[in-house]
Length: 209
Image (cartoon, rainbow, N blue to C red; front, side):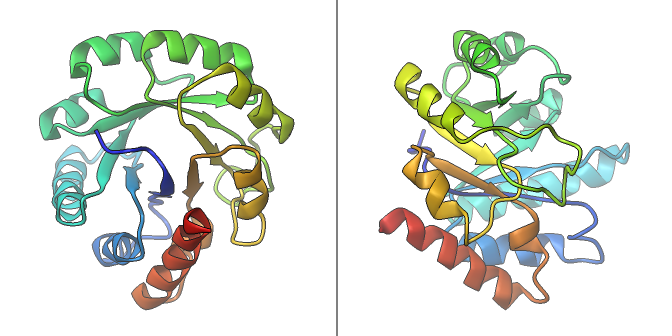
């Protein structure tokens, strides 16, 4: 498993409609995204399978990792990672199913207790947030930045920050020990694939500073 550090691009059905999914994700990968999370809560199983398979191939071409949101059978079928929210099922069961090498992420909101549970269940990274106002999940409860400091001192696992992450506030998150910047709107609201790549490169450069 590669080091979990860098830009973590998360797909959005509305932003990536009308044929934008694959070219925009490829642009993010060309810009340096290290992980891509395919998040689609629709019931169109065949389309989801086809899109996820295409994304898995793109990630392989760019030496990146695909993570499936809340679909253990699909992650198993493609041999890729899985992210589970608090309402999405058991991390421990997913770890037992996918094996020791799969990337497995868990949503912890602003709770160190949830992070303890996720770490004990075999999570590969711990996702905290939202830290800033979020267009994707405006009703998500806010998380204080100091939860990252506490998590960094308590856990050796990579920490992921999600929720309203922009190029302006991302450096603050990195000073609090974040390993992964999960970005949705700032990345995929771009008007063109070229702009997605430019934004992805700007995020990726933050990790080289």
